[in-house]
Length: 421
Image (cartoon, rainbow, N blue to C red; front, top):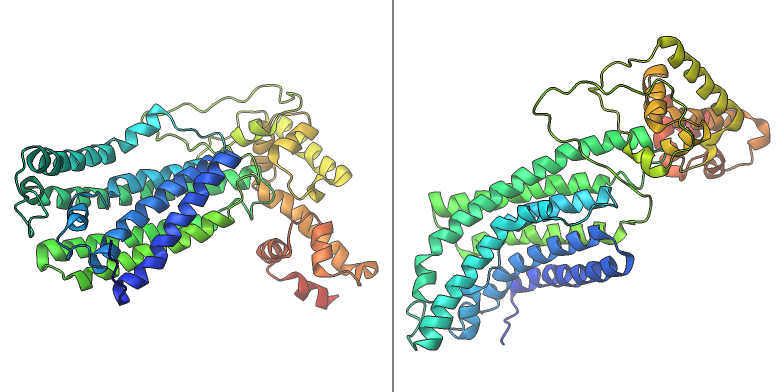
């Protein structure tokens, strides 16, 4: 098969190859490490790479070859936006919940995309398989390379593309909404969230929305305003290439074994739900980390139904434990681990911290770490310590996290405080 290298095909080729190669690597890593998120990312990358291939191969001369390669270009389902939205959404779900698995409920989201693939296969079977292959009829369109049904069904592809754009926008909005809930979940369950906050994912969400808007804009202009030339539409596919590049780098750098994340987004409330009553006796023995992850207080929780003296007693008990045992010095302390130390359950401890201390778990623990760092910064015997050493000995995992948290809680950097001593 001929491949003509020119400015337009050559610029898209590296993005296509990166999508295919990294997608394959993700599939291998998914099998080796049993990381479901890698499988979803591989699907997302391959979908984008295949879409980009249409314009790359088109500018490489495949549409103008007037042979089997041209027929291939007319029948292959290069673009399937109906699968992109669900693939991205379930990538987020599996990335933030290590127990997330493919199920029948998940499969239903891919039915529209599967129906479209079935339609494309039907068109190919009728035109090329039956009418041309079995009955020997020539392909009537585009220099005898395209069948009659494919010519008549061109409008179907346009409508499917429009529905696909709307689908991507809907799933991206849903993912963005759940990402905000995920941020609350992190703040209420983990003391070190730097590597599991996945800020790049929020940026990808924005990029996906922008990319969908760009593609929809090109589609609208081409269908409603004026037909676009292949050269004008090429820029839409260049943006797809940039999205492939960003997704590839972010996916390769993501470590899925950082923590046993078990984020479960709350289902939308259809009917009013009565507030859940906490147990009268908060002592529940040591709890597992999975139970800690299940505790997800939200900003809409009802006021505590526990007697005020009980809440005050536990708040004081918590403060005494923090001062005496200094659990905050463990960089990866979680709500579940702290609850186990206090022989209570994560839900009750979360209520104590949120209501009794007026903070989320992340800020509460980091406040103690910042105090410890301040003490060391002002102590002459630590003058020879570097800021990184003080950060690590105060319970922080990295200097960047130390600087960010210190500035957030004190309005100044650690180096500024050190200079004042």
